[in-house]
Length: 101
Length: 486
Image (cartoon, rainbow over the protein chains, first blue to last red):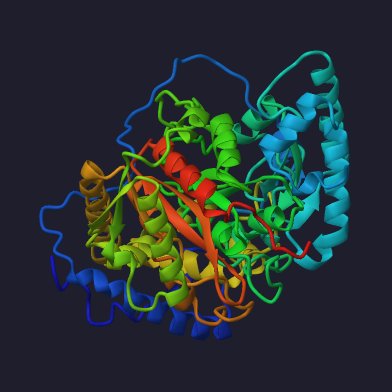
């Protein structure tokens, strides 16, 4: 499993990744984060040294799977509570910018 | 009687029981204390004076009516990441400025059911991302032992409030050390329960496979009391484990005799402050004198823990924080389209560290890099867990430092995120392995700053670390939390 990092893997395109995360960043932030994140990725590349052949990935600390509850109705938040923190609302719904022309 | 603020939960319970004071008097004393010192310490984001007094009066009349509960009338401060209905829950972020929680976290509901008085909301690193509480969007909390120093983080407000006697006890959360490290920096006891021991329902998620809620207190007995109140299965959190909760107060009495404690060589490395190493080794020696067997052990994958943690935690954070998009709650910056609105809202609402972690987490999950970073980190996480499983086959607990140094100066590490991350080296392992850990004061540096001993225990064996921690604390004389100058 060694050598999976591409040659430029430690140099990410910060603006593009930020766009994927729906996060606008300024040119100044892009430069600053680039330097800091390159530094962090350089450290993270230490993991290349570890032999992980045949090792199972661990996504969770407790081996719990498919937790079901009885299919019974129960009360949740009411509409007023749900909308109580909405930045914008209209007719008891969240208002958002126009999506479809 | 006006020094209630300097007392522990179990001392105050005794006073309430004897009728020496009322809960209302305790709360009023704490409010006075906060008024006097918090402009300097900045531990609180908000104080619930009215609701706390109302809860205190209700507790007093319940007690007068014969009601007895473990936390009846006892004040607890709560980290700003934990939802309590009707109270603010900004997560110390601008993006949630003005947010009022519409429901209550299970662990906080359990405290209230046991009679606790929720005193106020403590400062933290934004969304719990940080190790010094300097990433709060609202204020910088200061270490009560030296106000030029950080209190640690991310639960720095909780630890500083307890150390400054602005709270009798507090609740924090720990994703990579955020309870244990501030507790160590502020001279408190801090306990991170096993993953799955305490319900995460109502804890605003940072890294869902690592987050746990736990107590920050003045002594080990108080930590046991608060853990007892919060622990146990919750149908609202499917990762909370349905195992019986032992009686932790009983565990305190067993003593160190017969316990086998491991000292992992990977936790005593170059870069650790000699004063910290000396104090932790002296603590181990004390445990030996008290009857424990101390053995050298190895946790060989420790040097990779920071890399694994900052891949897994940021990956999970990037997904968890996608919910802050300006639609359902929090701030919104209007845009021409939803995507434009998301980008602008998140740019204005998140601070630098949160932005860095969202970018890093998005990157390690992105196509082409997933296998090299995220998948590999998950495998090394397995190896870190196996290291602990092997050690716990023969040891009841592990002794280690909490952090490589005592508290550092405010501003010292803010420009270099990697340096800040490396300070988490001894705490992230417990979260990755899903085990429990506690920080107990074990000395002070020459300049008077507290040093913490970390006691790590097997999954769902909090009784082991409480037992060892209590016996050490009783013998060590470092149990008194808070700087001498009050």
